[in-house]
Image (cartoon, rainbow, N blue to C red; front, side, top):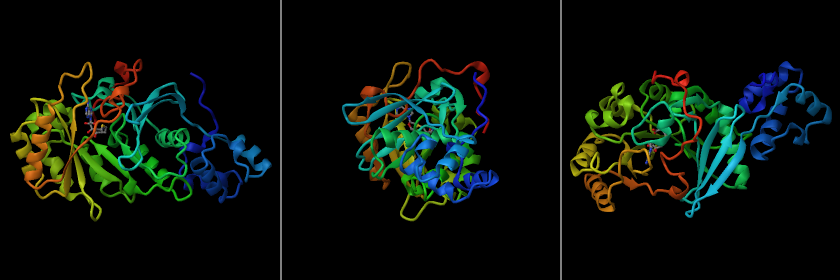
Length: 359
Ligand code: SAH
C-alpha cells in the first residue's frame, strides 16, 4: 500500500471546512466558493485548471491540497438506455453506479458502501458482504463522474441511494455527502431530489428524522409479517415490522409527500392475495405509497420472479384497498444494472472485514 498522502483531499471537505482549511493556511476564505464551483459545476479534476485563482495561489494550494476523483473503468449501455458505470476508488476497490434516463426524470443510482452487510436473501450485493464504507468524497465522486461522462452539466437530475450498500449503515458519510450535494456553490441539489432507501436501521432512521437536510425516504419492507420478513431480511430479527411502521408514522414527511415502501415480489413467497391484504392493513394510517419490485432474478438467488398475472393481482389488491401502488419497471437487466444486481466480482469480504450487523 502506498503511504497515505499528507495533502488534504478537497473532495472530502464541506464548504465550511474548506473555508477553515484555507484560512488556517493563510488564504482567503472566499476562494472556497470558487473552488466548489470548479469542482462541482465545471467538473475540473485538477487544481491547475482553476484559472480564476492566481498562479501563485494555485501553486500554494497544490502543495497543501489534492483532489481525488473515482476513475471510470468501464461503462455499459442497456437496450433501454440505462447505463452502468464501474468506478475504481483510490484503494483499488470498485463500485457501480447507474444512470436511469427519463423515468421521467434523469436519475443516478448511487452506492454508499462497497458491498453490504445486510445480506437480504434475494440481493446480489448482499452476497458480497460489507467490504467497506464509502467516504463522502466517494459518494459525491460518483455524481461528479456521471455528470461529466453523460455531459449533464446543464441537466437536472435526481439521486436514489439504491446502489450498493445500506446508506443508514454508513450514516455520517452519507449525510455529509447530501450536504455537499446540496451546497449552493456546488451541484445545489435540492434534498427533495434525493431518495434514501433503507432496510430499516431504526436508530439511524430516528436520527435521520431530525436532520436539517431531509431526503425522501424509501423503506424496503418486502413482507407484511415478521415471520416472512425475517426469512428475507436478517435485520428484521433486530428491528421488526411493527417497530418500522411505528417509526414511519412518526417520520416527518414533507407536505404532499409520502414514504415509499419497497416490496420485492418473489413467486410463491410474498406475492399472495393474503400478503397483499395484510400489507394494506399494515399501512393503514401511514402516509405511504407502495413500490412493487418484481424480483430481478440472477444465478445464486434462490427465488423466482412472479408471473405478470400474479404481479397485477397483487398490485390490484393493494389499489383496491386504497393504497397508492406502482410497479417498478426493471431497467438495465440485460447489463445486470437492475435493482439488486450490482456486485463487483473479485473483492468479496474477507472474514476479518465482515462486520456484524451492529446497528
Ligand atoms: N440497502 C438499501 C438500498 C439498496 S437496494 C435498501 O435495502 O433499501 C434498493 C432496492 O432494491 C431495495 O428495495 C432492495 O431490496 C431491492 N433489491 C435487492 N435485490 C433485488 C433483486 N434481486 N430484485 C429486485 N429488487 C432487489
